[in-house]
Amino acid sequence: MRLVVISGRSGSGKSSALAVLEDLGFYCIDNLPVDLLSALSSLPYAAEKRTRVAVSVDVRNLPDNIEQLTAVLNDLPRQYQQLDIVFLDATEEVLLQRFSSTRRKHPLTNAEVSLAEAIERETHLLEPIANLADLTLDTTRISVHELRSLIKLRVAGKNSPDMAVLFQSFGFKQGIPLDADFVYDVRNLPNPYWDHQLRHLTGQDEAVIEFLGKQPEVNAMFADICQYLERWLPEFEKNNRSYLTVAIGCTGGQHRSVYLSERLAKAFRGHFTNVQVRHRELRCSSGSN
Image (cartoon, rainbow, N blue to C red; front, top):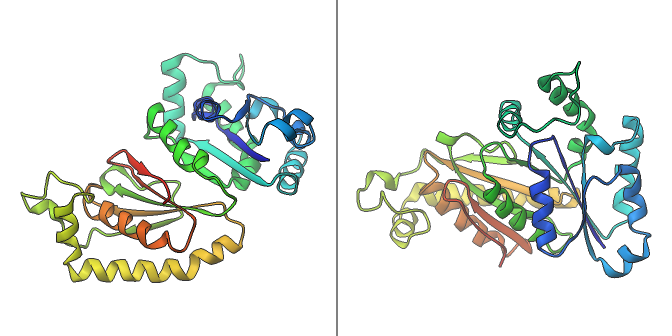
């Protein structure tokens, strides 16, 4: 039985993430009390008929104390064949904007607690879950549609307990991905943008691939990144990591970072069973081969 626990601060997209998993065939339970997580595996309908279960957990259904919450979460791995704790989050500024625009009530606000104070308190209460999360997704700069695609790629697309490795391209102009485990800056490499025939293309186009593949600096950078990851990714997997994100950044996230992310993913599909690619600025993703 596989259990996916979706949690995160209010306004970060938990409901949308759970809805995606439900559409993909997961048996979903919204706002399940944490105390009942352990009981799920022993229920006949869950164990016999539901091989993929997803539950959302938020600040409304936590135990009375942090120690009890930590004990429940630490006990889960021995009860399920595959357990994924996914924590969604966004910057406080964006969370405030989302609540203001939708006029929804934060679960911790009342006549004496402001929205900002509620978000701060919620951060503290959810800290044990955030610290134990297998995968953290930053939803600050992504739309609901993009979040749905990301959940399909990273969570639903992970069909085994093996570590899922994501190579993600991005542009520094849009900020560094906050949920990246490794970040490589490739802005020092030759830039196809300055060739007017290549400017409108991306690192997925054959002309750009050919151009970058001929550059000694590009090949040296690729070799150095491969050498480091080949040495250390297996150590992360031995340490029971379920997800790992390698972010490759160039200026705009169109050419160099896209090319290297695709090339690295192709190289590491021989090392790991679950290798994924996402191009943040191109809004394009692909799963493992």
